[in-house]
Length: 123
Length: 216
Image (cartoon, rainbow over the protein chains, first blue to last red):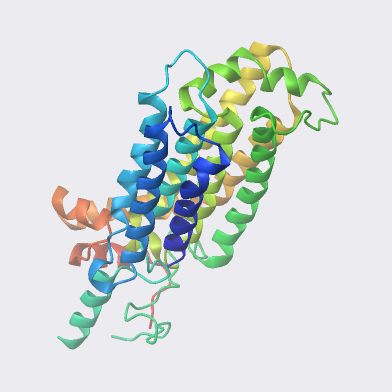
């Protein structure tokens, strides 16, 4: 489950980012909401993945990560410098994608293979 | 079916420590992958250190050979252009790639070349093409900027070292995927599902084909 633990940690960082980067509350509504909603989604998906029925919930976080990376391209002009808040989004986004593609039980082969072998032995 | 190496408590899948062709060791074994991770961790620290400079968090970068040429490289137009494409400093992006090497090296069983080919392929893409591109970028940057950066060269050397340490596992996985293609009679659907870690007879036979050391 270690990838899920990293996702939760990254989500926590994203949730406190508005305070670390001192977002301007009046001007940066989007930044504020984006940080908190993405953090909530990543943490919720990671926690949900602990339940056997929602094992693959962390796939949601791949989309969240790609969205965070995309914000750096969509909302910042290409010519100028990238503001720290958006650099943070891009970095955290890539990190989330990196972890979120990993399965929760990765030290053993996929469950489908385990079931397959169990079946084959029984038959 | 004999299963000497099977660890029944953890998984019903037999012989996770099998040795795939053309090696005489298992390239997916933990010591192999930990080695990659340790070297990538050094690469990460080197790149992240230069990333701190590009973020403006430190004012100087250590360079015992080329002196302040390092700063010329890190502040060059070539570097800024790459940073603009990646949206973060190019060193920082490099550190991200090294971190990816560690993360992708540490996930998966000791027979992941067969049971999670996608993971080995992803790991291979991060280490090999990305590594080669970064080495080429570092070298061309040196010629374009007319300045050299010691830690950039160290990072390039680490990238090459990582390719050397990691290519064996990627090779076995690709060889396995090729065998799956042959064993399935060229069935793209089967091949695709096996790539993503789904079980199939063709994958078992392909695995047996390239495992040298058999469980008897």
